Length: 323
Image (cartoon, rainbow, N blue to C red; front, side, top):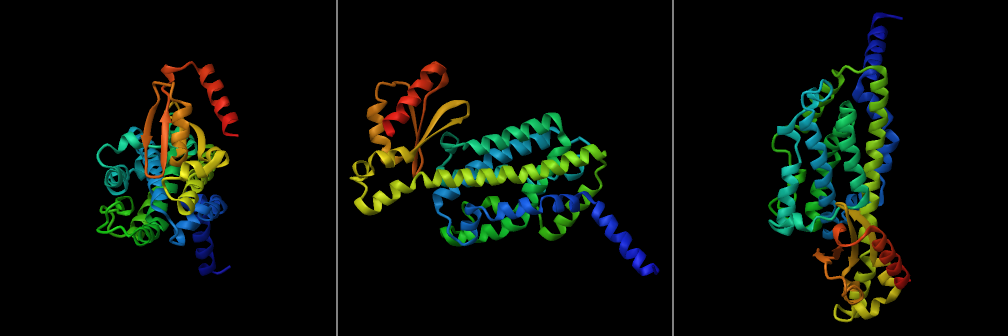
């Protein structure tokens, strides 16, 4: 083997041992699955609706709130410090700005947290406490994705939704990064400088795969929430707004109601078409709190208002009634 072949072989071996390349290889299939979820396909085709985008912003806010709090808390950790770029990458303030644009300054009262998003944030909290080095996998998955395909999605979203002057699109903007490509090279170089044991490296690669899977679950969950509103949209087109509650029928009502745990409270997501019917059914529940979005209403029963067993039987009776 001549010296040129030897140098090429050594370069390949060095590249293959880099953490950034190992993550890229380990997550290749997961990356493809994430890009091919129905929600992402709709984005790429410019078939994104404003309610979908708003729900996505809510989920991203919760995810980045957890991720960036854990990165801040572990900023001095030897595995986190090299890839800690809060000035360049932090997304939380941008998401707050976008949500305030769509919902006003009281947007926090309107937050909807899908179940898959909760699982994602819980995992981030767990990792931050037990295995801070795994935060590298989550930061890589989110931030480098935002700097890559996320930039294309930003332009598609702006065009599809007719958003002007960057309003509602701050999430896609990185004013602290003058050249995304050069910054990604720097970021990967910093990743490759992290010293890990074989066990830590193996766990980190597995966590990267898990991070992509968590994102896929979030995308699928958001699509299900949007689908829950489709019976309402169809009724509006066929029968008009005033008569949609009557035209929806029990089947539509059943499909419009989903139960999930949101911020520790018994929480229902409901298409607006079914709201009047449910208000009549639940009118004796004096402590119900209604929250509103453009296509969804939610009602929340604070856990201190009802005993857990009573809530279970209430929910069961509700499902039976809807069927």
